[in-house]
Structure formats: C-alpha cells, structure tokens
Image: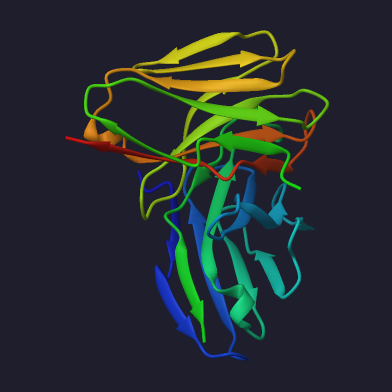
Length: 114
Length: 113
C-alpha cells in the first residue's frame, strides 16, 4: 500500500527555472494539500484541493500554481523559481472534509534554488 | 504569529526514561487538536487526536492530555525507545470543518542509549 507518493525526492534548480512537483495517492481520498516546511517554522499550507476539480489558496500561495489532475493526482508548479522557495515540500491527503480524519503525508521533495 | 506554541524546542533523554512534550494554543474556537510524529527525512504521521470532550487518550506508550480551559495539551512518552527519536508536532484546526490547520514548530526528541 503506497499511500502518498511524491516525485522527485530531491531537486536543485537555478533561479528562474521552472519545475513541477508530482503527488499521487492511492487511498481514494477526497482532499489533497501542498505544504512547505522550513527550519524553525511550522508546516505552511500553499494550496489545497477539497475535491476533484477544485483548488484553493492557502497561506503562502505566491509563486506557485497547482493542478488537480484527477482524484489521485495533485501537482505543484513553480513557474520561476526563487531562492526563497528553497524548502521541503510535502503533499498530503485525507478522506474527510474536516479534521476528523488525519492527514497522510508523502515523504517530501527537498528543493534547493541557487 | 504562530498560534500553536510547543516546548521544549528540543530534548535529549536516555533510553527507557519518560518525557512530556507541551503544546499551548490560542486558536479559537475549539476544534480538534492532533499530534503527529515526524521521523527524519519522512512526512509526519498522526499519533492521536484530542476532541473537546476528551481529557486523556493513549496510543501504546504515547499518552496525550488536553485541558481546554487552559488551552494546553501534552504528549507523554513512557519507557522511551531509540525509535522515538523524531520531531513531534502539535496541530490545531482553525475552526470546525476548516481546511486550515495551524502547525506548531515541533519538539525534536533525541533518545540516546
């Protein structure tokens, strides 16, 4: 049972380059999320998708775009990477719409922008 | 300002000892409070959830408590093992049904032999 799978695991970009982080879940969850984790800070929500076909901004959406391709897949795109986007990115999913169901996280993508 | 504060920031204990991690929150109104464990290089995994009506909940060697009056939660680990070395993150929902969660910065626990 794979759970939440993220690719790639590591990536180094130059300032101005673009890339797409991929995320897929096999648990038939409705909602999916993208977070970033920076040293000394709590996880912060970038974008989320409450259900297939919908996406909404979180706390720190600037510089990112997302696509909910289908129920399984939720991708995060950096159009023009900046050093401030150096971070660890986590994709997560959960079954329900509230907090009664836990988030299931992938193992992260470690992104460095030089 | 982060409305979920955790202490201590880091903690080192000997294998077999007990420890308690603290979480203070100011997010209102009350909804669920959840503890996650994050191993190095991995994503967080849910340990337990506390609801308004619960004061204590155990999950094996982990026991979470909640005091809604003082807005404090704690996670007590009994008879620590090397595999307990991880960051422990307290997470609060911002409101009933909200997708927005407030994450604490975590407590990094190191269990040494």
